[in-house]
Length: 493
Image (cartoon, rainbow, N blue to C red):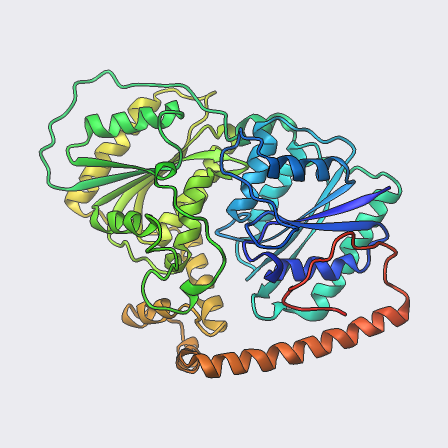
């Protein structure tokens, strides 16, 4: 029996907007389909994955068996800091690290976002899919928000019908499109592929300055020889004191998509008093320089550093660390390492770190790598002492403007952003007027809930009317839902 499996990676589970899009698309499938959530939840359609890529826990085995018995996988997720939510990356890491390869199967993607960074996320999920053996048949990138589900109603629904046709066609004739990415990338997207140790043969320097450098790694450096090498060079050759944070050791919780950071003042994460996330943020604020060492994993950065980035979402839209200096290095990434380093560098630049360099280590081109890292350390020491002026690139400025305008157009739900933008005069007229109105309107939770409830009711009424038209037109597919997922933001029947 032919089957389609929707793997929902949103931390919001059955309340996610991406699941809403997937449920609409499923109406037009001619083959049976099933949904599964990869994030912690109380429903029976959820698996509980661990971050250890080489661990094959029962939850992983369960979802693996479903993948083996399906014909098309549909990755379903909202874009979280430029890529899939970290719990979905747990799954991707495990599949790659444990060397699974799926022949004669296809994959597609359903992504929701505010239409920023979605192209990056889609490109990377295609890279991973094809290196797992899947043929990639298509994708949807829909604008959405948690209250209303997807926006641009008719365009999104038409796009769903088109992708459903592609999926039906791929199954019907066993069509396997030519891959965009060769499987030579597989080595460099593996979370368990680490490079070799290197060292600098020079005398250690004296700690004679009063500045401090915070080195942040995702993985523990004991399992990443390249990261260990970099940390040793920083410790031995910086004239400033150095502190190391290994995020894996801190065991911070993953983002749940609760959106608390959208509505309160401050760092705004509901877990900040329950784990050590806020401790890391305070150390970042207290330092003069920040060095980030990540590891290439599933086309992005390791799950531990990705978790920190997701939890810092409420800080992502403002440069709260300005004027600190730093640099970014990605280990194990080979031919895609520089691409990952560029993205992580953008993240740290956007939160205020003036980065002097970013680099992805390639084991095939390690000429003078120890000397290069040493030079970065010397430049960082000089930048902190002399307060270098480092100008952002044009693409960085353009993305900042896009983010400001997109957030403002949505009513500036991030209240701390609103205050920061006012204080630093970052608004672009006329969004300030519109945003000021929405900010004070949404300060009152009662009014806010009334407005959202009325809007959701109106949207649902229109969607139900269109659903009836689809039923009458005979366009509904023959496929059946093999499990009953409920609780989606928008219902269709």
